[in-house]
Amino acid sequence: MEEFKWVEINPEICSGKPVVKGTRIPVKIILELFANGWTIEDIEEEYDLTEEQIKDSIRFASQMLEKVRLS
Image 1 (cartoon, rainbow, N blue to C red):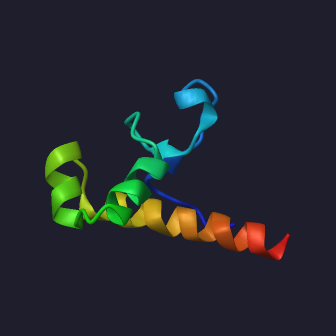
Image 2 (image 1 turned 90 degrees about the horizontal axis):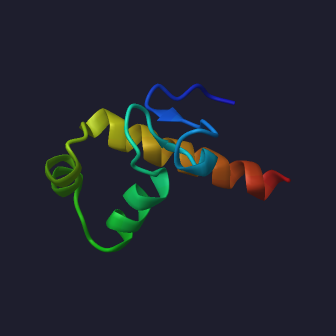
Image 3 (image 1 turned 90 degrees about the vertical axis):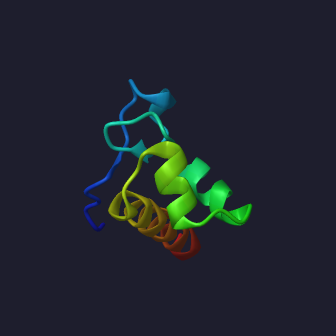
């Protein structure tokens, strides 16, 4: 599996859900925001994240979906 610089899974943070490293912002929230029409710029401003953090979260989610598809 690919390494993700900005995504971490830690059982002590958000019950082990994948989050943006150094935050309590779940990757799921990033995806939901995009689904609701938010832009990268909107998310950067509202959640004080970088474009790199946001894109890494999306890549992580994509890889997880691919893993599920191959199972």
